[in-house]
Each structure stands twice: as structure tokens, then as C-alpha cells.
Image (cartoon, rainbow, N blue to C red; front, side):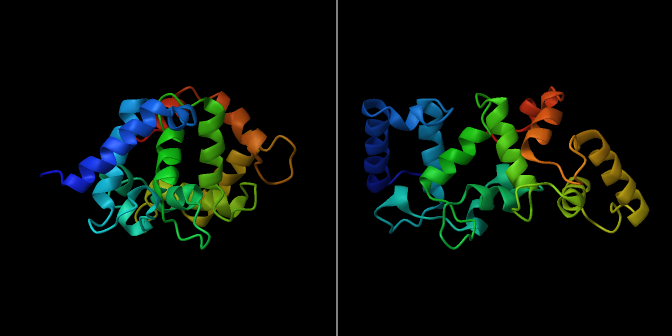
Length: 197
């Protein structure tokens, strides 16, 4: 698989930007090498005829062809949370793509990871994890098929247990600070919340 002259020029430009203007690196938890690798992966998804490759928006369907996202049960939510598209279609430009990889990197802080995990799990985007969000979360984690779905009673009991453990103010939902409190007691969360290209 060869690299075209246009791709080499773009890659050289990006290397220049990263080395001379380290602001890209300063705004992420990624190293220069990780940023360059991310660009190569992003560039593979951009049609060859596109000139301004860094500003091109890759459709969510194309982003989800990446094996690292394809198998993730929250893949569409991840794209929608990190997309800055005005039409909320889950498409990603290069900045969005870097933000996604940065939040999922090993170097990202627990606060950053928990903030984005909360947003991903907040399916209705209302700023809390209510019963409906928690049900969708459980279905995503269990595969959401007829064979793996919990019975209504099992689901209700599980959500009751989650709220009992997490809902500190007893309002029937989990807010961000409550979620972060629960995550802070889960040492495996940071290591499991990652995407490596």
C-alpha cells in the first residue's frame, strides 16, 4: 500500500505543525508519534481527491469501519459525543478524531475519562443517567439480544441496585459528580476506558 505525493505533503505539513507549533500536542494527552499515527489512520478514511484533508468530516459510518471502534458497543454514542458537526450526525473532522483518541488514551486523567464516559452513557443528553439511560447501558454491555436481555424484573432490580449504590442525593438519577464518585472507587475503569489505534 503506497503513499501518494499528496499524502506525503500533508503528512510533512502535519509533522511541521506538530514540531513547530506544539499546540496540537499541548491540547491533547497524545505524543507527537501518536498524533502522526492518528493522522495516518484518519487520512486512510478521507477520499483521495479531497485537498484540505484535516478539515474533512468523515461520516460516522466510515469512522465505525475502524476495527478499534467497530467492536465497541458504544461506538455510535462515542462518535456523536465527540462530533462537533452542527447537524449532530456523528461525523468527525481531524480535531474531533484527536479529541476522541486523547480522551481514550492511557495518559488521559480519570476526570477526563469519567466526564466522557458519563456523556457517552447519557443517551438522552439530559445531563443525568436516568432509568432509561441505565437500561440502554446494560443492554449495550450485555449485547442487547433476545438471548442476553434481562427480564423486566431483572432489569428493574439491577437498575434499582445501581441507583442504590450511585444516587447519593436520592433523586432517581445519577449526575456527573455521583458518577465520578463511583468511578473513583473502580481502579480498573481507567485501564478499560481506552482506544489504541
